[in-house]
Image (tube, rainbow, N blue to C red; front, side, top):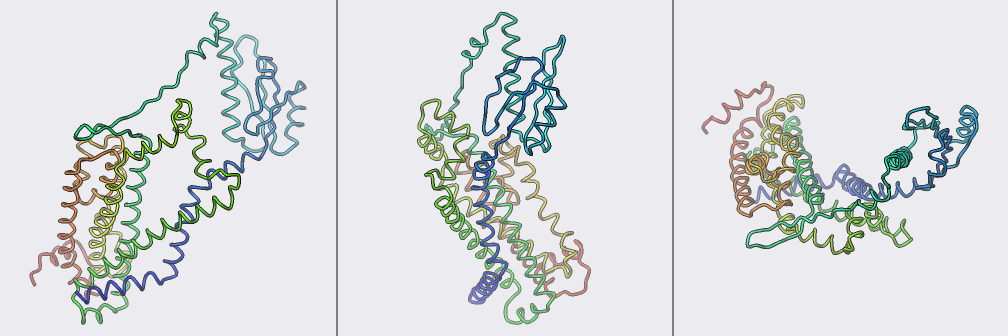
Length: 437
């Protein structure tokens, strides 16, 4: 046991002291903070750029109908198309909207001239205004008042309430649950590959440098493999915790340093969300709605499950990666053996759309029980509410699979770690597995 602890300590300290670890520990939170902050900040910054759109309307249907909107300024011109186009486009960033006159047809065609590609907000606003005007005129021509149609429109607020065992009712939000489930599954997938490959690379490096021959003289191969796996696992947990802490710090610093008008970045992001709009229009306090949504998700189960499936999935796959690293001599051979091992993970991500749409289907339940896909699939199902017996069953199967895979990988590792120059195949690996010591 003491030897395994020494190997764990060596693996942990040697990796956390590397420059690559320190760089990724800082870059990771910066990127995550940027994903949270930049969309709101860029949107706010881009709105400061004013666009001027000259409107040449030969039909007269849209005169004075385009109102200034989101830093898009409209003005009307009445000259020749070529002259107005040249004058309007002479100033960089300006545009010309040309609506040609039609003899018989309704004016549904228009042309927007610009030096650079106009933004989606410009084209979307122009099309929406033209669509509304044309539709209103068609309704009036048919003797229907457009205001009657407008007043008949209503917003439907649909609240989803999940009835759990014992008749307990909890409000939920499908969009939030889908986002949380997808995020959790992708993070598990990312971490398993990221740190599992580190184990493979570490074993191959020691084997190619013949360092392993010295190490094996002091410890058993199985102890070496287990120590490397657990050591890298602690490295992954350390980096993950630091990412969360540093991300929160970076976001806090950015909010206090940039948004000095009292609005936080999260406020800016939420200002245009459909959820907040529906909450405001229906007279519901947005803060209360958020609390109800969060209350509908079992956060304790979510956090515990994430840590368990992160460690369980990592330990399962890293034992297989360690066996591959011990069996092969060259990096080029790793793809041949990594592909079959990693297919279940890729399969789970490929079917994530089906899992998120039908989290309680037979496919989703079976995939959340199979240990090679359960770390991703079960994490995608948990936000939607999964019976505890399914979670415990899935965890138990994953533990048994890890023990079996570690035993199997240990046999491959024990033989392959000291093999040099031999071309490894699946037949040879099978002989190592069936070999009796």
